[in-house]
Amino acid sequence: MPRGMHKSRTLRRVFVKTPGGKTTLHYRKRKPSKAICASCKKQLAGVPNQRPYKMMTMAKTAKRPERPYGGVLCSPCTRKLLQQKAHQSVEEKK
Amino acid sequence: MSIYEIGRICVKIAGRDAGRKCVVVENVDDIFVMIDGDVRRKKVNIRHLEPLAEVIKIADKASHAEVKAAFEKLGLAVWDKKSKKQTERPKQIRKAKKKVVEEKSKKEQKAEKKEAKAEQKEVKKETAAEVSVEEKQEVEELSAGETVEAETKEE
Image 1 (cartoon, rainbow over the protein chains, first blue to last red):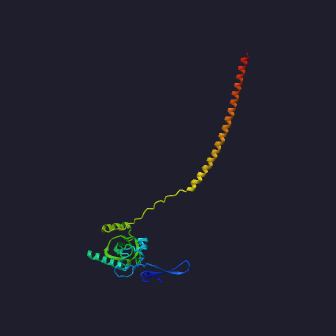
Image 2: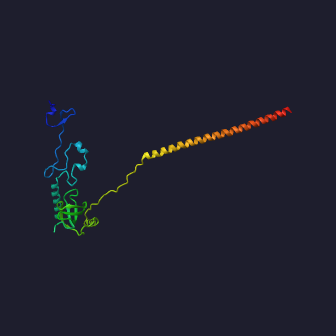
Image 3: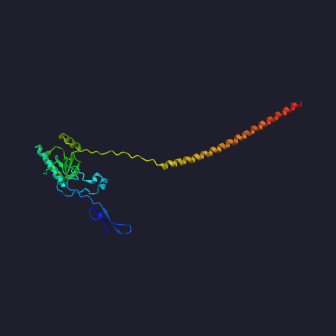
């Protein structure tokens, strides 16, 4: 029987094969949710969702795309925003 | 004639240089153009560019220096390479070679010591021989003196 604290689904279950050949059940913390675009709410590509201790070991360049609004907006939304800004600057000059 | 003519100022809307202004330097084909300015000089797809109304006068395949001069006139920033100069690696001197030299010197030292010892022995032998000759002479002198004294006493 599992412990009372392990009856809830707060922790995820991982089956681990021991050196003796038996499979045992381990309980691990769940991963954080995937990053989403601030504009269209789609999942962002190139942004890992790992536990903070793993994210701390990663390089800054490995944690988000290296472009303006990288890790905040998806690429189509970034394009739209930059196009809008370019048009605005043209109108302002007129 | 496409809108991406030579000298057309555009905004890059994709990639690392997104949001920066650039100028078309060369038309590679219908899809690709060469850009320069506040971006890295490179061949890009025209879908990654947003054209602006301005067109500047620059030559076809203009160099980075020409583009830089034109952009400075307009008061725009220019991307400059910040490449580092390669420094020479510090060379390590092998210790093994030194040891070989030391071993040789030790051998030489041993040989020198041997020679020195042999020389010392020879010198000692010579001195011993000289001393023995001198002692003999002294003994003879002393014996001669004693005989003279004895003769004088007899007289």
